[in-house]
Image (cartoon, rainbow, N blue to C red; front, side, top):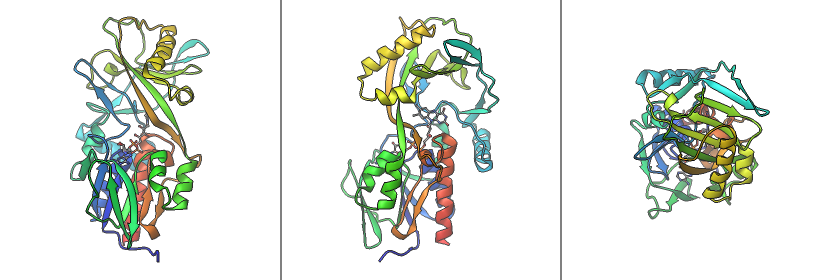
Length: 331
Ligand code: FAD
């Protein structure tokens, strides 16, 4: 029989900003948490690509803070030096014409890298990296986890939090719970082709970043314009629609199309050192922002940006608010 049980031991799947916010808040309230993350480090899509010669934020570019609880959180990041305000000279390209941006948003970036706030949040948490959770099974009111890299995980959990993109959660939920599966299946996430281009020669460009409308590229940004970065590596994002329609292109073909567009925007790409990355699930989510999903009767919770508008702030709030809901059950 399913009934709400005490929550003592929680597994959080995914060490992106949502999973970390959730885990921290739970641990703060005396709940024991283990985090499983398939990558080698934390922070998920808030990430920086580093090579010997250059580095570039290739996922989230900056974040904003509007909710009072997230504003408070960001203040603590600023004080710890793990984030800073970024004041770019911003332009907009629309209908084949450049103009200044009038946006008054306060923009923050992680310092020195975009994954720095995520790293900061891991302090005091127990995280196993390189662990891809491949199967969840609930027996006798406890969760048994399997992962691709090692055999069954021996610890049993009262509660599992899936803090991963909707399609990846959907795969794990198959046959487990129809309410959770319905919600993950109704989320629409789109891909993003990202190009990182290091220009050895000076570029004759009078802006740090630009929103590009009605083209296959939607954003370009000079990483060196952000606090605590240097160099002339630009991050260029494909638009969500073009990226999704072309998600199965080879890296070479995607690069060719993006270079063509960038050249038309006035960038000489001839000597650029270019690297491509495909984000299969970059943006989007549920049409209605429901925040998170908690199913205490089967010990399951879901959170992530896709519940909450698809951005860093939405992700953090989703994880944080799920944890608050679980604390109420615990008490
Ligand atoms: P994620 O960051 O995706 O974290 C999920 C984690 O789960 C990942 O680390 C992943 O490796 C792990 N994982 C997945 N499956 C498993 C599994 N089975 N087992 C174990 N681990 C697993 N937001 C903004 O606010 N401003 C921006 O400018 C901005 N630009 C963006 C540009 C791009 C190209 C992209 C990709 C995103 C951008 N975003 C932006 C969105 C922002 O990055 C996300 O909203 C936020 O980082 C999502 O956090 P999350 O914790 O919900 O998910």
